[in-house]
Length: 408
Image (tube, rainbow, N blue to C red):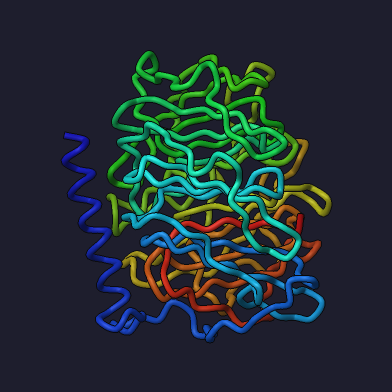
């Protein structure tokens, strides 16, 4: 039954995206996701601040560079898209150690890997593409956390809901991937069909949500993680979490139920905060859940705590046809309490339902959906947590998962 629901819902998602992009490939059917899009210019690699790589549904990889000093955002001028076999689209892309890029393709049964140079160009790593036995990955366009790394970038995890297992790879200092001794790891003992994953900010524990065809959480299973990638089950937590993000201190896990009216049932306008015990156990902090103005569809956690610990909620309206303003909250590192950042909710030019930080935590890259011809924008994050967008976004020729890297 779960598989039938997933297939039906996947069709609904695809049809929704087709309606949004319209016949010409642009959002022309009554809603435009962002009004500041432009034809991408070029950014000189030697002066770049950060790079963004987008893996589209046809396999093309596009490279973009941000130059914060020159105030430019556009294609990397020297970038040559890496060759990839024809495919039906990737299921995840991640940056590890700030210098390696990995893209996972289920239909090809391959992982591609590249090194990132200081100019933003990609060079295929030795031994790639790497054959990998993957099947049954939740590849719906709303799913962003089935391929993740630990904070140190030394372990790569891939969750497979249908086979009820997690693949684990060790990442060497050269970027090579080696299957961990514990891989593939079965989640059957926990009766878990694994989908979204998250780690605490220190990389000690892995938390995995149950698969859902309606973007709604039901329970979470926690695992302790050894340096070699071995997983040991901690417990199953009866909490309604769909997506999670660990705070940089490693003390808290922030999550959302994922319940949105146009996909599931009714809106859940809350952020849930859990403290992480010494053994990895999760317990709600005082005051949790914390009410939001809009329904969270995704969250983005700033990866460092130099200016505070900030978490942002992004999402769609109840009809699923437009995005809401971005909400910002400051996480108290002592109590886990959330307080609204001054000026939140923030209205920026680029419509945002998905957000991802660069490693410095100074910029959040956002876009409205993984469909084609959508804007990718860069949001400046002030020391107060306030958000502003000062540069025009670029229009992606095709959509897909994306990953962000500071200059290696």
